[in-house]
Image 1 (cartoon, helix red, strand yellow):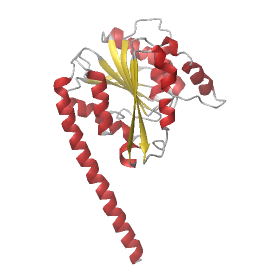
Image 2: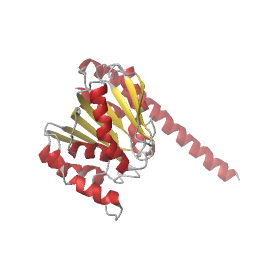
Image 3: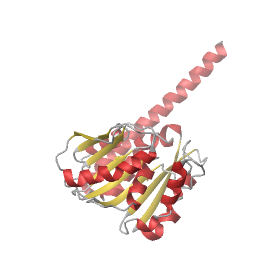
Image 4: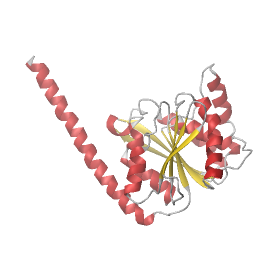
Length: 268
């Protein structure tokens, strides 16, 4: 019994140590964001956030909150997409520089539905709010939504996509007989349809140098490079090494280094 108590005490101390280090890490990067503010371009370019499998409307809350506190991000808006594909607009909808628009799907586990709805969402932003230029920030499966949109034929008015940050998104071929596999693999072969002036940053997590973030491998994230590099303006990749608290798949969205690097890439 005493042995178990001793083990739990040691584990508790270790956990508290991780939490303390994480807190210091957050303070440090909030300061770096503040320093970045003076170098940021304030433009009428909205940044559209799309989460991954099963994500909620709060998927990018920490990132957008940090940006607003640092004076980098402008008005924050939420576009909720219900099961019927109807769009509901919440939050600050008046135009601002560096506007932040988070997209949340009720069908958050169906990539085919999400891919089909991306054109509707972007067209509505174009005609309803007169948004002509956007950036994308995506996490995990949200990367497939963005890529599908970028290589699709647009038959109505759409914003121009300038930059795209894909966090922990896999881009390797899918080996499955399910419809999504065939559709996804065909989509990857349409890179020649990407905007030629597009700039892309991919970010991967590598826990303890083991090659992945528990759900997506570093290799899977890097698989986008040979697909797109000859068709776009620039491609960059960053691999972040760390522990489960900092670079695990879902944790990457709120990782201070990711928040800082994403802002630097989009707005400088």
